[in-house]
Length: 372
Ligand SMILES: NC(=O)C1=CN([C@@H]2O[C@H](COP(=O)(O)OP(=O)(O)OC[C@H]3O[C@@H](n4cnc5c(N)ncnc54)[C@H](O)[C@@H]3O)[C@@H](O)[C@H]2O)C=CC1
Ligand SMILES: CC(C)CC(=O)C(=O)O
Ligand SMILES: [Mg+2]
Image (cartoon, rainbow, N blue to C red; front, side):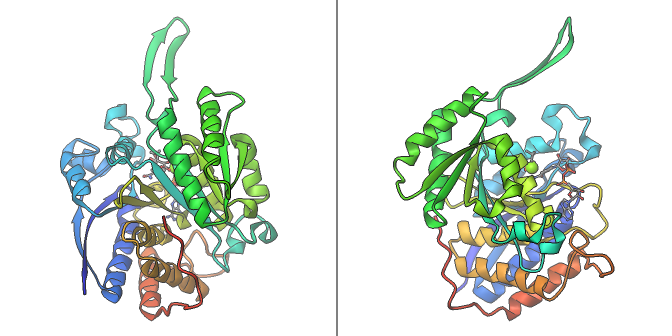
């Protein structure tokens, strides 16, 4: 039996096309091995869409995404478009797409691959046992609030507003608690309730929601303290739930626990099965076009696509296992390589993962990942 799936693929800007090519390669290899047939539609987004169609998020791209079972995205943005007006910036497309598909829950898993302890700038003993999930609210908060600039006697004045409704806060907290029940049963809710009204609402809702999950332990942390604890005692965290901007910042920090931001995947989900899968990192203009970007974050995002949109943990685990095996064989991209060792190109690493995927034997003793 072949399972048909329609995938919208949006390579975007900078290293986006390079890493997405490897993600698609692994997705197709997984499809061949595990009986999926993919119909792939490529779409323009971000700066490349501005250049071609004068619109960072063209209607045809939105239509492809609406029709798809899942969306795979590279990254958007770059210095070329940094002076554009707000509505014509590449990043506007990403925010618009997340909002349009109502993907309010951004899952950003942080785990340490065996053998990569030396790639992190932190001490190996601090990293032992790191395995947590940042659940970031993705369609509200300061990135979506009213913003404007005005001329005043004190010069130009710029305003960004941070707004959250109880409904928005409750649905992301419930998602975090639901996931925690399937993991380590610990939720750390991160806010700035000593200063922000929106955070006081967040904390009040978190306390109320927690009453429905008596088996899950809730801890509140102020975001500044959380930023510190995350690198001081990272193995203590299980599910970290927070608002949009705090989650954006904390998840980049979390990348350093694993060795590189080139390793962190993400899944953006709403109420249904459809999801947007993309690396946590950006378009990395500093290394774009050189064939040296780490494709692992994108490949692991494909694994999350199988897990969350196709509810197929076997394939997700096979892809994750293939990445683990490839790293165990000593293959490293430039961001992970230790001095004196040879780095694989983006393409070579992708080929290695496909090779490992074709050889991968599932471990029958491993439990099937608990899924929502
Ligand atoms: N989801 C998205 O599309 C995102 C887009 N951006 C955009 O990307 C552009 C660059 O932003 P930055 O702040 O430089 O963040 P970035 O994440 O693109 O890069 C930060 C650093 O990490 C490195 N890096 C990132 N991904 C890598 C990979 N796969 N392999 C090896 N090294 C990697 C880069 O070379 C750079 O030194 C900006 O225009 C920004 O707005 C930033 C974050 C997310
Ligand atoms: C446009 C930005 C909000 C993208 C970003 O940094 C992210 O989602 O991590
Ligand atoms: Mg970010």
